[in-house]
Length: 483
Image: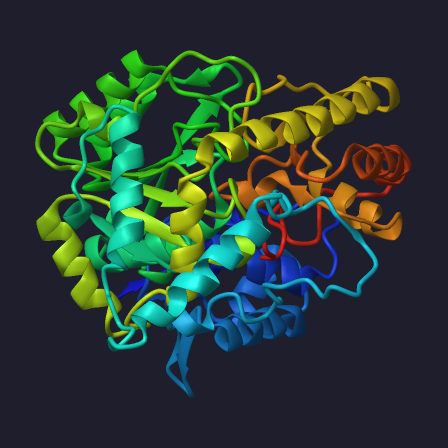
């Protein structure tokens, strides 16, 4: 039997902020969010434009324009004379409305991006890779799992962190994002529930959506993970896949204790959930922190898959990441990735292999530079914006700010007018929530952060002015690069 919505039914479930402008855009975004969150299933017949306009008290032209926008984005299928049905776009269509890469010459201070500059050891590593590079010229240059020296270095690092690992358990990827996409492609199917933290890394959410899977968010408290909520969500949602960031969580900076890691791994075993654990920030401690092991160290049946990256520790321009799993999983992923990019670039792999030899020096370097930047940002925020609340993280690369009012999206708009690009809280959530939060990275030099925070003070006054509402997108900011 065909499922359909009446105009009044849809009017009751769309979440439109008072005074949203332009209204058609806010309406389209609200319907899109309902579809992506799974609250409005696909293949449901939408109400006629006239009926929805009457239920919302707006003109038919407004609803027609919103429907047109949803069709352009791939969220409605229509047949002339028959009506419109909810849909999901082809993966390649997601995010095409807004550029993923902000132009370098837009003149804005990039406080939306938590990516440090290259390590001081990069030139030396490039020279070492240049010397070694010709020796690989006799081969094909294609290695879907990655060159042996790098896989050995990655495996040895896991061993040093308390997780015995063989090189055949490592797949080298084109960065952590590539790793996430490979795993979601292999393990997440259309409509499958995928458990995620809220807030979490935005591009992981995009990867789940591109598979047409259903996001199951579990909130993180200011002081850490609520294990009861997390394990209950595993059981109640029957999620066979979860994406977690236990190491200086992006964006909160929280670090999960070993006892909690063991408990999460145990719950995953009980409820048959595979854990994809993103460790991109794991090496970025600033202060003395308790020793923690990779979550896979508490795994007994091969259900914890680890993701790592060279981007945060060494440099994002290297575009090298990795996946650690069972040897059987790595073989399956190698076959899958060969249809996409065949292999990671050889030269960058050799650079990262050399950098692993100097990893402790880089960790110390990052601890000094990120620590100085973090302290400078904390100091200026407490002086300029004392109403904002945050915990000072002991590692990672960002502060997770609780604003004094739910104005993150208009604050981002106002900040752009002050020369600063921001990452508002809704970017890191599933359903348009987190409007009271803002992520502020401290990966830039102290002077730049001090200047940026002072501009934010001016932007806050503008965003809090009467008549400013919680964003023209229904509390959900447009997609943009957020690292």
